[in-house]
Length: 218
Ligand SMILES: *[C@@H]1O[C@H](CO)[C@@H](O)[C@H](O)[C@H]1NC(C)=O
Image 1 (tube, helix red, strand yellow):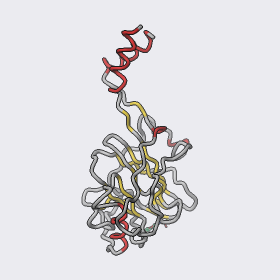
Image 2: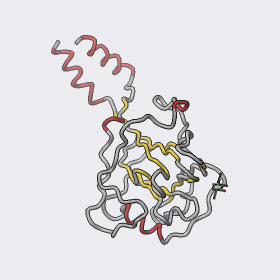
Image 3: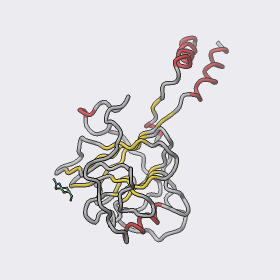
Image 4: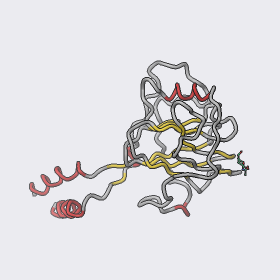
């Protein structure tokens, strides 16, 4: 049925893809793993907490260890033996960079910082790490702020553990945690989008019906 194939060819690119990035908080020392991710609006970043007592707190590039006004803050998530089941989800709504740190003690100054979409030049992740080392810690909000609601179309399995097993996306050039790399240079091109983490957004009803019809007609 050539017509159905033609219909599929037209419809398939319309099905949007959103990715989730799993980020471990404190699993490998005072680091976020991976330390930065490339994301597009519609993607999510799911933070899983490891011992002992960390936060995911949004800041600005200019003030790495101070909460961004109106930004996200997970609150402290202590755990004696990780991972903590209670994850923190950041909804990516913009292609702009977003900057984060751990607000515990001097963790931020020690390099425990994270970025969504850090630029490859200018305000790079590496410069953020370096700035954090010398930054003051700003006062925190009293409680957690923001965070996406826990359950989503594919995230309603909180009883089954913090995140699905399987390979994590690993940025090819991720900076070693805790060290402030030497500044410029062709560093840390962010990871490619995780092919395994794609999920299909549901297109408008008519489209979906058309897609199903096209598939069935094959
Ligand atoms: C976690 O750290 C915060 C801030 O330092 C502290 O107030 C809180 O008591 C800690 N929680 C645990 C269980 O250690």
